[in-house]
Length: 245
Image 1 (tube, rainbow, N blue to C red):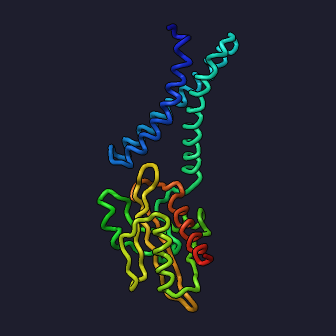
Image 2: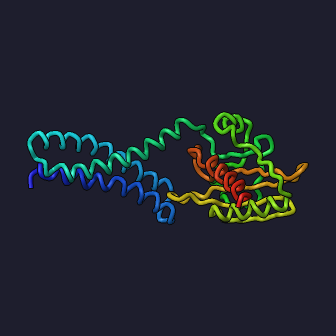
Image 3: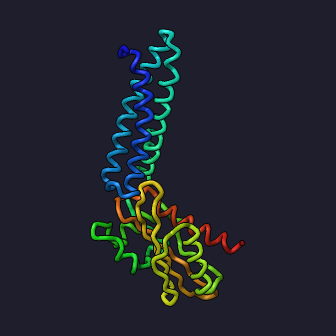
């Protein structure tokens, strides 16, 4: 088999291998096969391969069609599709990384964020610090101004019970329930890499009802790519919707 004949097949194989490296790197990290640094290396390798093969594949496709070798279009097209998927996913991630603040700790109460207790002991020595600074508060305020304390007409006990049910319904692992202090602590594991992000819910009494605050913090990474804010928004939406059942 000549090099010319091998190129379409090579484009297809590498084009399929690139997304497999991304998925394999993430799932390997999630299942404890290797650390997240190794998982990221799989992803970066897949991205590099996808970028290189995309350029090569397009050139091979153009020359092949000009020469009338239409049978080469299918394997090359399959390979190019795999490359485009990889680069589109990473491009979306890059857009998030460059458009969102580099924070990994988000709270609905920026002046008095709920404090972690039981969860803090699970984070490990290498985890991100749990210091919610004024600088973080300012960055969050600009990026997620809609994240504010929820005001509910429910009593503190009713809000607490609903918060627990909502957290469980979202698949969070409850690690601490303290009705007296109005605190619920939980861990939410991300789908792909299996990162553990920590959440604390605080319920306090107010005139005519209760105040519900959330704080979500990632254990690793400078930027959460908006994951913590999205997690809080999802909880708030589910909390409000559960009152309409």
